[in-house]
Image (cartoon, rainbow, N blue to C red; front, side, top):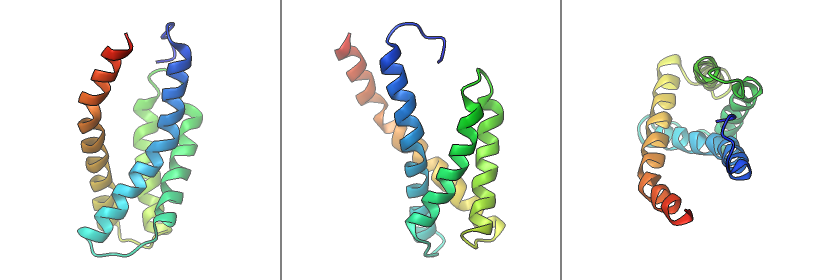
Amino acid sequence: MTYIVEHRLVLAGVILLNALIMPIAGAAGAFLVLHMILGRRRPLALLYSVYAYAAGVTLLASWIPLFSWITEPWKWLLIALGLVHTAGLSCPRALIALAGSLVLTALFFGSLSPALLALKHAMG
């Protein structure tokens, strides 16, 4: 994405929003999975801190082209370790919470696809 010449400000805005919103979306998904499926109560602020720190560390290297193949699995590993060590979950429960938050986030943004396509066509 860093090589796209046209609409650089829009691209910068999208990248900034992605960096800010994805930890919130992941933490909200983990919060829902922990409460609904696993019956565990963990504060949303605790889950957000785990997701934000993991995302922040990987954002340092994710701007390098094709490096996301390394940084994304690394981020998921950091989130799983954070859920185990910070939130006090067992490894299987942390993996279930992580997988559930990934699925919920993918479903949420996948459902936004038609609206984003319509917005793209409306903009030009």
